[in-house]
Structure formats: C-alpha cells, structure tokens
Image (cartoon, rainbow, N blue to C red; front, side):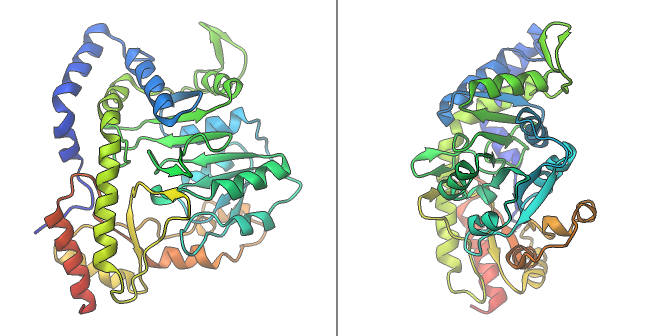
Length: 368
C-alpha cells in the first residue's frame, strides 16, 4: 500500500460542488479583489476564533510582516522567537529591520521555552513571537505574563494551529495579535497562498488593514507606506467551503493521533511530543523523534510511505540568519529536535488502513 504524507485531492472532492458554485459567482460578478467572499470569511473566522476581528492577507509571511509593522517594530529592536520553527518566523523580523533573538524550545512540547525566553530579555526587547508548533499550543499563560511584566507585546504565530485551544480558548486571541497561514497543507488551507491576522485590538486591526492595502484610508488617499497583501477572493471561497468542516476534521486528526500514539508507544527509541497541560492540539503534523531518523525515513520510503522533516535546520543555523548574530547561541533542544524529527502521514482523509500500514512499517523497522 502506498501512503501519502498529505493528499489535497481528497479534500477537494469533499467541497467540489459548493466551490464551483462560489467560483462561478465570483467570475460572473468580477468580484476578484476584496469581494464578498473575503468579507464573509473574515466575519466567519472572527466568529469561530471568538475575537474582535480578522483580516485576510496574501499569505502567512505577509501576516507576520504586516503585524510587526503595525506594532511599530523598528530597526534595531529585538524580538524573541523560538529557534525551532519554519524559516518565516525569523525572516519576518529581519524584513522589518529588527533582530530575532533565538530561544530554545521545551524538550517535551518543542514549543518556545518560557524560562529560556525570560533569560534572553534585554532593554531592547519589544515583543515575543510564540509558535503553536505542529498545531500544539504554546504556554500562553507564562509567555503572556512575561510580556505583561515587561510591557511588551506577544504575537501568536498560529500558522499551524487552526482550531487549537489553550485552557478553553481558541488560539488566535491569546496575545496582542495572531498571524495565520492558509497554505494548502494547513488544517484550514486554501488551494494557493492565503493568510490572515486576528486580534482583539480594534485600533491595531485598523492599522494592519491599512498597511496591507497600500497605507490607504480612501481611494487614492495614502497616509503611510503600506504594501499590497490581500486575500484573493477565489482562495477565500475555498476557505468558506472548508471552515464549516474544520471541527470535524480536527476531531479526526485527534483520533488519528490517538491511534498513532497508542501503536508507537514504547517502540524503539521513538519519542512523541506531548501537549502542555491546558493545551488541545489539532495535530497539523504527526511528528515523532528518533535518533535513527534518516534510516527510518529511507525504510518507510522503500515501502511507499510518505514522510517529511519539519524542520532539518534550527533557525539560528540558517545561512541567511547567522550573519545577523553576534554570537551563535547554544540551543541544544532545538538542535537535537532538528536532528531527530520525522513527520508521518497526517490529514483528515487518511484511512485507518493507511495508518495501520504506516505503524506496522515503523514497528517492523524496529523489529517490534
């Protein structure tokens, strides 16, 4: 049996009829830019998250950059970021001229370590970006308290965490602002690039909306330098089709994760990240850790089972980022994770038979 690590065709089949209707309406009305589909999604996404408002943008990286600009981040400012995340988390900080200060991650969750973050605060620190890695919420209470104590902002990089929750609240409204990606592989993904911002701060939402639309307050009236970052109407239509399915999709992901954890517990040297107390993951990825990562990946590939590595290099070791560091920090957990992580097939349409095939192959590798 061939098992893909991800399969978007299965998701498309579930929404095809409604999507064609929505797309035909967009074409007939020529409502391609900032049309009704975008407004509908922004309202629905805000209602789902339980926040004051949301704003659709072109992609998740733009979401981070627009938020940083709206927060007033300036060249030379320092922003704490986890050293184990997708590249864009740190890239966005440098794109606005600020300096990412890399923090180690917790061994148990692989999310930013609040204790390490506290040690890296300086008078130049203006904010913290926490990442809900693999759909697992970071400790928003501890990071929020740290930010409040120092009078700085907390941003959620929620690109992988649509529907995750922390102590009964959905992520996306736990800090000053949250940045979202709707890349096709996300729990809530479109069929191209897309992103969003969410916040409970009305003034910040207004500022971000203005920056994302050329700094414009009225047609041809521009009061600041902005950019062109708008959620495409065709992609908003995909999100409007998929959002009503998100809860059942996330429930299926949790069911699959439970089966994985049960089947792989105690097998070889496998370690599986754990949810922090109070956090409910949506398992954007099903990622294990093993000292034999490359061997296991090759073994599974030979059996037709797809895998991926998220991520093979900690952020502070990327060639584009190291020149901005005075000293290369020692971040042992992030480095170890980069050497050990392997993501197994995980998407709502994955069948029980495919999961069993994957687990059987993993167990066979270890002779279990």
